Length: 445
Ligand SMILES: Cc1cc2nc3c(=O)[nH]c(=O)nc-3n(C[C@H](O)[C@H](O)[C@H](O)COP(=O)(O)OP(=O)(O)OC[C@H]3O[C@@H](n4cnc5c(N)ncnc54)[C@H](O)[C@@H]3O)c2cc1C
Image (cartoon, rainbow, N blue to C red; front, side):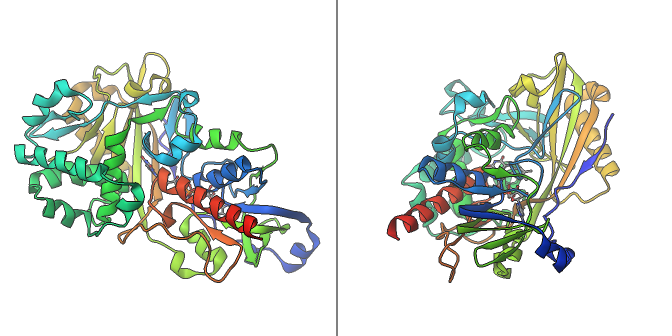
C-alpha cells in the first residue's frame, strides 16, 4: 500500500535567491513575438490560438510538465488524476480547441446517486434518461415541487448566450436557490455537496452566475474523463504547438516591462507578454496584490479493490450523511483504462472542511465507505492521497469577463481561471481571449 501525500505548491518568487552577479553572467534567451508565462490550460490555449493564426509564442512553464492543476499520475497501473476532475463536454472552448474522439472520452451516467436515510437513491436527468423519470420524481431527496424547480432552473440556465448569463443580476448561490423556492432538504442534500464538489466550497457563497454556468454545462453535454486521464487534455493542446514552443522548468521570477528573468538567471523578452499563472504568482510578477486570491482546498483518496461488485457509473453525493466524504466515484466503471485488469479504482473526495491528520481522515473515510458498500471495503487498499491546498481560487464575487489587457501596460495580458470562472472552461476561454486581444493589437499596429 502506498499512502503518500502530494501538495501542489505555488511557485515561489526566486529572483531574490539568485545573486546579482550570477544573473548578469547568464545568457539572454532572445526576443520572441509573444511570451506566455505558465503552461496550464490558460497558457496553452492562448498559444494554440496564436499558432492557428500563424503567430509563434514561447510558453515558459515552471515545472517539469504542462497542464498546471490538470495532472495525472500513473501508479502501479492505476491512472490517478491529481484531485478528482471531470470534463464537461459542453464547455465551448473545449469544443473549439480539443479533438474529443482523439481523447477517447469515457462518460459518466447523467444525474447522481445520493445517500439518503442509509441507502443510495438516484436523481437522474430525465431529459437524457427518460426511463428514469419515475425514479427521479419519487426520489426522497427533495419534494415533487423541488423536481419541478430543477426543471425551471435547467430552462433558465440554458436560456440566452453565455455572455448574457454572465451579466445577469446575481447573488450568492445559496440565496439564489432559496429565492427559487428550493427546500432545505434539496439545498443541503443535493446542491451543497454537488456545487460544493464543483467549487470545493460547501458554503454556497459562490456567485449564482457560476451556479447557473455549471448547471447549464451539466445540462447541455456529457460528463467525461479521457481514457488516459485528465492530463491528456493539456497534452493534446501542447501537441498542437510547433516543436520548441514550450520551455519546461523555466520559472519566471521577474517581469520588468516586457523583459523576463528566469530562476536560472537567464532572461528573454517579448513584444507581448501573457501572464497565465495562477493568481498568486501573477500578483507577484505584476506586483499587483489585488490579483491575488484566497483558495479552496480539497483532498482526494484513491482506493484499489479486486473487481468491485458495484456497477454505478455516476457521481455519488454524501446526501444527508455527516461523514468526511463529499463525493465518490467508482472511476474505473466509467473509464476501465484507469485500473489494471480485474481491479477497480475508487476515487473519494473529502469535504473541504476536513482538516484532520491524513491518518484520521483515511480511517474515517474507510468507515464511511464500509457503511456504503459493506464488507468488500475491507479488501480495498489506499493507493494514494492527494491533499491539494491550492485547488480553486475562491471567487465569491461575480465572474465578469474582463479585458485581458493589464491596466496601464500596453502589451501585457492576464489570463487564467482566477480571471474568469474557476474551471477548465474559465481557464481555456481566458487564454483564447488573451490571444484574441494580441491578434487585434498586432492588426492595429
Ligand atoms: C482538485 C481539482 C479539481 C478540479 N475539478 C474540475 C472539474 O471537475 N471541472 C473543471 O472544469 N475544472 C476543475 N478544476 C479546475 C481546473 O482544473 C482549473 O480551473 C484550471 O486547470 C486552471 O488552469 P490555469 O491555466 O488557469 O491555471 P494552472 O493550471 O494553475 O496553470 C498555471 C501554470 O503556471 C505555472 N507557473 C506558475 N508560476 C510560474 C512562473 N513564475 N513561471 C512559469 N510558470 C509558472 C504553473 O506551474 C502552472 O503550470 C479542478 C481543479 C482542481 C485543483
